[in-house]
Length: 332
Image (cartoon, rainbow, N blue to C red; front, top):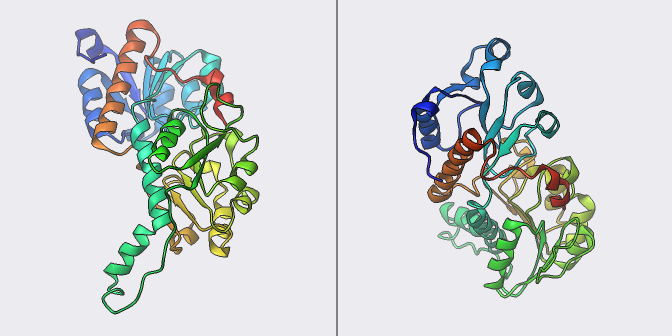
């Protein structure tokens, strides 16, 4: 669906929780609708109390989320359009209880997030970022030798969460002749990859453990000290899903003590504040939650936010709706 402006759209008020990560989307929303940005209000609570009843539509992002107190302050809220695939920061209980439809942006970012998983995997195994720092510090020029790294091709890749993104990661692994296995809450029907009954079993089996599972309380600290111990001193963990899935303190200790070989993280428990101890380690690669951060993907996500919103206004339902009923099943 291509979003077009109409005189009806121009009169519709939309509440936007805060600035969205794609600047063009902020501009387009303001062109199409009468947008109020909640974060720009001097007193957000007072604004909601006085004007909350005027909004039927709301735009947010996976990172900003939507709290129950905001939902409850919008008595006529009908639909939410969210930028991103995560919905663990959207208050499911209040939204479902009110029958509010919620759109999100799956599918369009799968390729780039899977690419990022492999970029982190290759970087951590072959120590590219560490090698870059080594050269820039003129240590090579001064006669020092950089250490050897770890081979990727032909190794074992374990995937926690074989959904759309997890499947894309598995497909990329075929190009490296890797063996692939996975763990979900239940086996995926028709999957060509072996299913492991437990995460601990998967960690014991694989050389690289890639996290592609949903966030939320059901997966919080699923990758804990025991799982990292099972991964072992030659194992690597990669996370492009949600920071909450890994016990970050346990990861810090495992990296410091040599319990595992390395890690690559695009997400953290308390963004944008990784544990300070991680910043001092050379066996971890850190990225600022940018797996979907390509021009092409962000534009596609922005368009889907607009299309979901327009569909919600026109039909009462977004094009891509958050699968609340399937959320628990999707958690590994």
